Amino acid sequence: MPITPVASTVPAQGVQSMAPTRAPKQTMDADMFMNMLVIQLKNQDPSSPMDTNAMIGQTTQLAMMEKLTSLESTSGQDFSLQMRSAAASLIGKTVTYAGPDGSAVTGTATSVSFTGSVPAVSVNGSSIALDALTGIGN
Image (cartoon, rainbow, N blue to C red; front, top):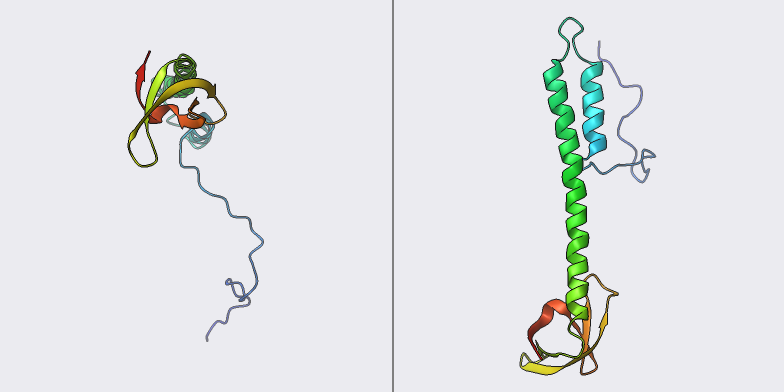
């Protein structure tokens, strides 16, 4: 006797699924690590509980991961501050950069803008990104 399905699991054409889609996490953060540890503790065999050394090791790994994440953030902020300081020190100095045609253009840096991710130096009325400068003189 054949069995016929009661309802189709495939939505009809033109009908959109109401379930929201979620993009999977691509990085492991402290929340994911803690969730994995809690799930591991919930599902452990009561007759053979997790070794306390292993648990301490995992907790240490979590602390190290959090510190490395903090260090990465601090390093990025330090680099940004160094770029700003370097750009500000150029005011009044002669700088060189590649012009639109590729030739070297020289001028005096008159101001600095910090609106973008890379500071821009104003030279001869043009705004030049700090990393596009090819030379610095007095």
